[in-house]
Image (cartoon, rainbow, N blue to C red; front, side, top):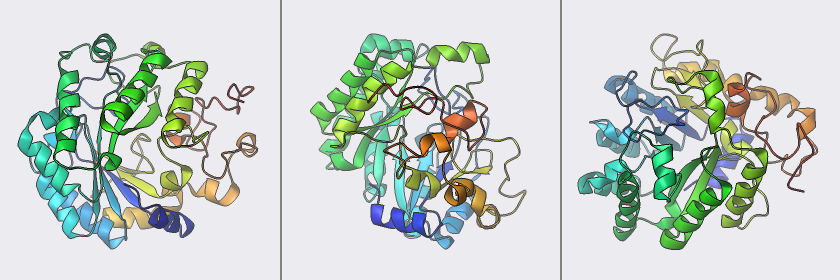
Length: 346
């Protein structure tokens, strides 16, 4: 799924490995906790010419992979044209879908074909119908069966389980035991591993800030889930992120409003925009140090983090720090390993 040799070369050479490309914010999954600003009806969408020009720039910049994001990228009418062009340019297609579009056989088949050298990730945060209903209150609980059946049919097509993920968000609306049961289910039933994130307390438009606290899981519950998460990968511990710091540094995002940022969940209002402040390639070259988190690359992580056993692969989630108002270089407020308090997992 990830070419770690190429990723580490990109990190060492201070260049980019992957582009997170949001092509729109429309999504049908209705996650109550969504922090990607996905909405039932689109508000922002990159136009076709801009998507194609950005792909050309990504190839020119020697990137390896496109992370196709939304919203729900598979709702975009010309999405397969975009994926075909990316493949022609030598870019690996990684599709991050909620999974509901896989109810359509042709969508499933074409996604499998065009992402055969990359990965396909679905999003199913709980396999318990009652918990799923709580997480998606405006959607039928039958959506859960649609997603699980889509994964089953994807694997029956011959798509490798090792290049398939279930990308989940752990929130305060479910127990650690429920999240662990979901990880267990995907591993047992499909041989599919889980990619784990912990809720970011911002961005959801219809909630006031104080209402967002309901989605924040406790440190102790998070530590339980991460113990099981690490076991999937044969590790005792993993960074408390969906990726390591090497991937975080070597990834750049183009958002659905044309902003260019270090990460799709870091969305400053004053970020440079493609077409306003130059092409994607021009912006990346000009803003390269900030997009690579150059302050950490040059000066190191916060002192409180340096004694951590994971310091070589983790610098905390930059997005969670940003969401908490601590800035891109602040301490990760969701880390349970000890920057703010005595570690609870040692």
